[in-house]
Image 1 (cartoon, rainbow, N blue to C red):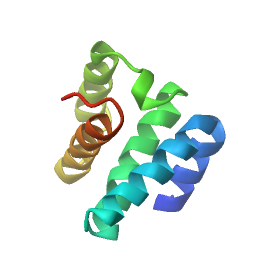
Image 2: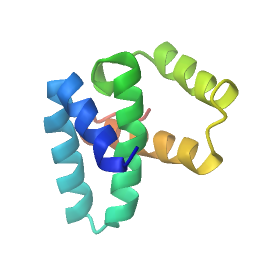
Image 3: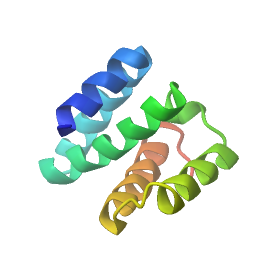
Length: 101
């Protein structure tokens, strides 16, 4: 599955995520971050959105930890994919909730 298709599916499943992802991409581009980095962050976050069927901004710390545990243990996610998710979530929380994840 391509990066775009995860993002497109997540935006269809959770319409408010479309606005969040667009703003995230815009802010990261303005900040001079690479397109590849931004897309990798959004791809991993999109997978989580598809798993929970809600915006990542609505999730509790317990839900984050349970998901991170599951993808590490059960799905054997690569270390780089795991890091993209964690760093992407940190950036997203900083951008939208003005707090440290």
